[in-house]
Each structure stands twice: as structure tokens, then as C-alpha cells.
Length: 125
Image 1 (cartoon, rainbow, N blue to C red):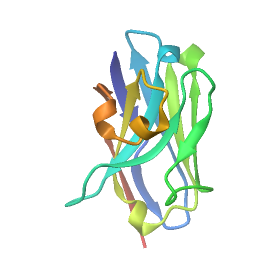
Image 2 (image 1 turned 180 degrees about the horizontal axis):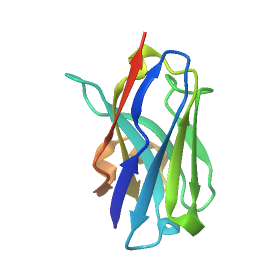
Image 3 (image 1 turned 180 degrees about the vertical axis):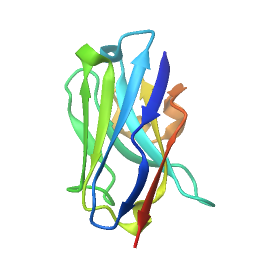
Image 4 (image 1 turned 90 degrees about the horizontal axis):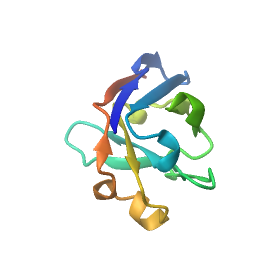
């Protein structure tokens, strides 16, 4: 499966962005989708995941109640709606997919065999 992330950009603190992740190849519904981010000099960190069967979602504490992950299987596209953005949200954001449905695994980037290319989000303070 190939993933294409888009929607990043420059936004002021308090603003919003919506990232998209479009998949080609195997159908999107077969996978759990995750979003990760990586700031300069830092490890790539888990942001959110949406489970492939239940549609249940899980978020990192740092983005809970501000970010919303969703996916439209008919469009083979996933989304990350980001509201109330903070300076510390600035990073390259990556979408990824995994066959796993185990939360502890899904927080680990090594559980995702397929990745998009990343999209830059910059939040100005």
C-alpha cells in the first residue's frame, strides 16, 4: 500500500489544520491507521490511531481533546483534524498503517510497515 500525506502548512497558535492521508493499493479498511510526528532533534512520536475494525480511536495525552483522527474507507483516505494548535505541535507529521489492533503495539512506530512521506506543520507563536 502507498500512502500520500498532505495538508500541512504554517498556522498561528490557536488555529486549525486538517491533514489527509490517501492510500492506494490494498483497501484502507484492512488497516489501522496511525499518525506520528517528528520535531527536529526528537524521536518520532505517536499522535493518534484509529482501529481498522471497530473505528475506535486513541490519542497521545498531548493532543487529546484537540486532535481528531478519522477515516473514510470509501475514499481510502484518513484525516487528522488539529484544533487549538500550539507551538509545540510543530513537526513533520506522518501517516502510517498497520494490520495490528493491539494498542500497545500501535503506539510503537515499528509496528507500522507502511508510511507516507510526511507533511510539515509549523505553528507560529
